[in-house]
Length: 304
Image (cartoon, rainbow, N blue to C red; front, side):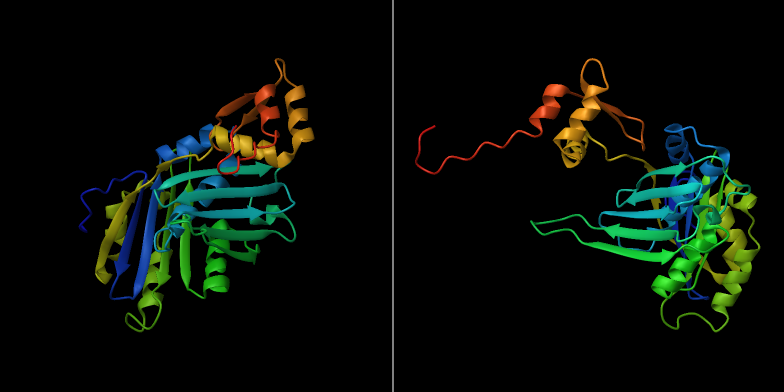
């Protein structure tokens, strides 16, 4: 068996590994409690939940070798029955995600359900430090694939010029993913990428879901000297807050914000976070205060 970090767990974990002989790097992700928390916020149809689980696993995979000082998000959107899939992973290993859809859903449900002109966007945002603005990078490609794994592989080829293989799988208990990427440059032997890809092809979705990470990596890549570079714990986390809700209401404008208040008795704005299900209630007086002018600071040396 391969040597695992002492902190590595079999669930809700991300493993980075290296096939030095082949010149290939990889990431393996398995989500259990995290996946259960994402599903608990909304009663998703089974096919939509499967797409969301795969997107969640893929998002975590992409943070394995990318420098993420803030958060990485993946969004697929279109105008078809499957309207959008969104997932986000932060530098702290917190994940959240949601999906929007409309009935009836086609069978089988594939990325084709996003409709014509659909897009895949991957965004990396850094946190502002020392008074400097944070940075934001976004890669955007057309969505033209029969599976989500194919769509993400196509993104890396088009946007990053990086040969990539990805397998995604989900069921009611877990969401898992495996990603291989050829190391930049001419590292590894001449047949390294071809050999790693052939071994990758022997892995099925059921085996990806059922096999413990250390056993899986050993079974696939032990002849190529697989070594684990590091492990990271993953968990569900949402960044919603009362302050963010207030900011959202301000962005709507006074008239629309008050319209949201008027439909409730007693008068209050009730906002539910789609990611975690948390509800926020802001009384009418608090909503009105959001649009009051800020007091002007007194000039130095004057009395108030």
